[in-house]
Image 1 (tube, rainbow, N blue to C red):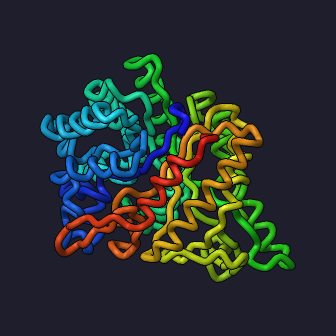
Image 2 (image 1 turned 180 degrees about the vertical axis):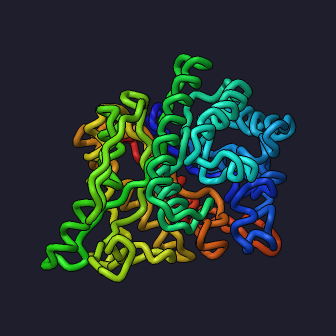
Length: 411
């Protein structure tokens, strides 16, 4: 194993810990019966030992803003010390920490008074970033915002995530302020640690027409490819964001993020087929089809490892290192999980041979966790969680991932 390649697993704080102060807790009634989710906040020392079992040399985790700042005028020093202890344990075991500052959830007070479509959201987020970065000075790798497009599409167009708004103008404002928050956080993190490595984690997919003969389906897949994958990359290259949705006038905005990346974090899971349906919002229907007989996950997502190469080729145009910050499958079938890992790692190995600058791979996830709109039934973890006893049990895929890490000499 090459020491400079980051072999890791990824988690998010809220999905393992929960938090009574987060907006998602009030949003989803399923959390009322399991407010502590896996009790990772209390069992973290035992859970971190699993990283040594796996043989990873990196761990991506998030800090929960609503624990650190449960009220606008109150900081929780105990929570800050908790995350400091995680970093200390990781460093003690020669495991590189990668910290995500925002992974979908907000403090309730923030959502009520300064949601992302309000200008004050930027300064409130920056206060939090400064507090965390000043406390976790031993962290080099940072993700400022996880999957900004997923957050905004769910929260401001579909209305299926907090704040539950369905308004295009609010969506645009929130997008602008989120990207400004990244830019300011990037500068702040570098002021605290000069050699910081900072990125976002961008959820990317490959898109295909549901029916190749249908010109509307083909048009939709091209729009999706440009907006969902490419527009953010272009904004980091040019400082200008272009948004093109079907049947809507194109929009352009200046965003101060040109060059504000030290690497690029890619979250990749699946391919999506698009069908034109005039009865659906914006005329778009999303489909998952098992076109290549690779199977689908328990989320219903097509397993499409070759799409990862297409995504990595697109990102390579940024000419900076690439880290796959999430890649995983929800399934109880260990054989399917092993095949998923191997097929995607094979693609990365092929990309390295083609001189695509991939520097790391993080499997999602270390443990089974709360999976947002799907609740508790999506089993992504290398370690299975019994939600009645909260016991952790290794899957066969955990041992397989350990083997992959040790055996891939090219990485």
